[in-house]
Length: 143
Image 1 (cartoon, rainbow, N blue to C red):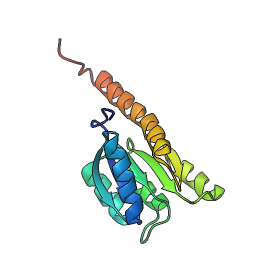
Image 2 (image 1 turned 45 degrees about the horizontal axis):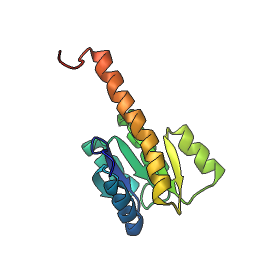
Image 3 (image 1 turned 90 degrees about the vertical axis):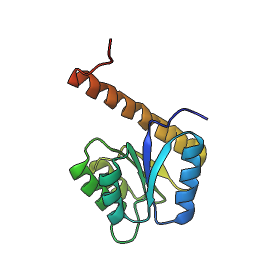
Image 4 (image 1 turned 120 degrees about the horizontal axis):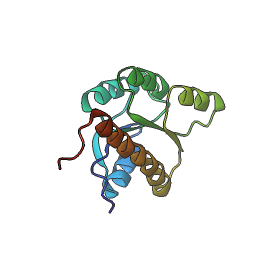
């Protein structure tokens, strides 16, 4: 198992089996799954409250779509990395997601390797952003 416990993840999908599958894959690889929810409306609330490093979110969900939730999350959390996990391959939807600031796209059905490869690429960016913030603030490691 990899050492990824420093990366916090929120899973948002209206399908219980998809959420469970993602949770098992991520936890098996050492990621810290800090929350799960089934619609875009509660995703905005949970993201704001939990401040995860990464959000894995479906596009098509009840109440508020993943794209609309992403736009709301982006207004309050610019630094979070959002991966859309969806069966929707429609070019307009993909373009809208990219325009709204996604960090990646995982097409369903997915396998563990695809999920882990995608999130690992984002984890590298999360860690680099943390290092940049520490450097900018001048709060480097103690001598």
